[in-house]
Image 1 (cartoon, helix red, strand yellow):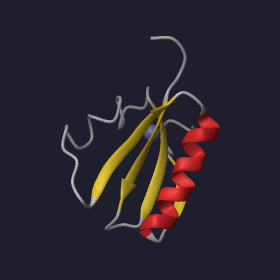
Image 2: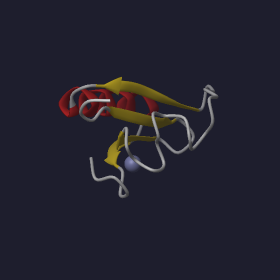
Image 3: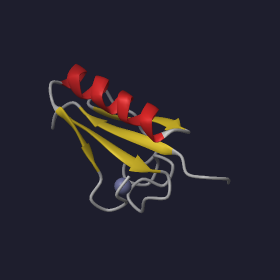
Length: 77
Ligand SMILES: [Zn+2]
């Protein structure tokens, strides 16, 4: 695939929205860490083809779950 996509991992229980690159080892197109499942408590938003748009999503979803947006320490998006 061309370029890098971005994903946002949202967890309502932990009140977090974490920005990842699609190439991230814990992300892998939003599927590796939590399988294919999407629950009411945690899910992935994406893909985004722009980091700015993904970060905007992280900020708004973080507000939705009552937390703050963060960036993955592994892939440094
Ligand atoms: Zn990551």
